[in-house]
Amino acid sequence: MNKSERTRQDIIEKTAVLFNEQGFAGTSYKHLMAATGLSKGCIYGHFESKDDLALAVFDFNISKLTSYFEERISKKENSVDRLLVYPTTLRNFLTLPAWEGGCPILNTSTEADDTHPLLKNRASNALISWQNKIEQLILVGIERGEIKSSTDVTELAVVIVLMIESSVMQTKVTGRLLELNIAMGFLEKMIRNIAR
Image (cartoon, rainbow, N blue to C red; front, top):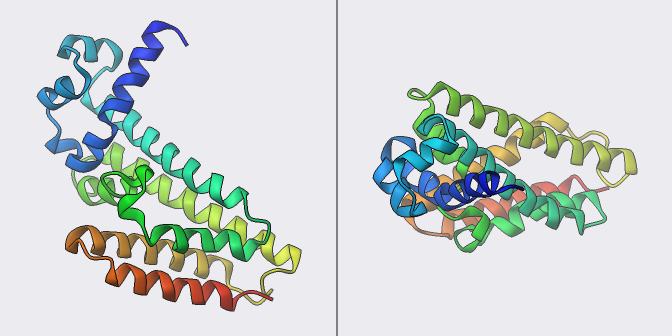
């Protein structure tokens, strides 16, 4: 990685939490300059626009979050245990470094659904990709005989994603873990019930 690429990556990493917490509209160039210690011209030298930087930051945040879960999932042998990584890990999402500022999919979707088509598209693709990964985990489990063959793969994947996202939203808004823990406990039961 050359100096220019390192600077570009440094800008992305230093502004990642800022965009995730404050959103696209709430993040000004003053904020970006304060976070990076760079001038507006230097930032523009590495990104065509604030939109360009926001998209790169979203991709970085999703990659960080995906890697966080994939690392934990890869340590589990059984498909049911792999699916259980989501609810067991998310019980403490407020303290997870990968979720600093909240879920980037949820935060971006909420802000960009009617205001920023490019970010909305990125968030939509991230949701679809996540759902597809969960479907793959379930299908592998069925093939291995670890998950009941009668399991509706798409239905379960959709419910997992929706329960997680809505629980995270409620916890971020209220600052309470009670409802999140109830929802993740329910999700754990659902996942254990598909085991063969």
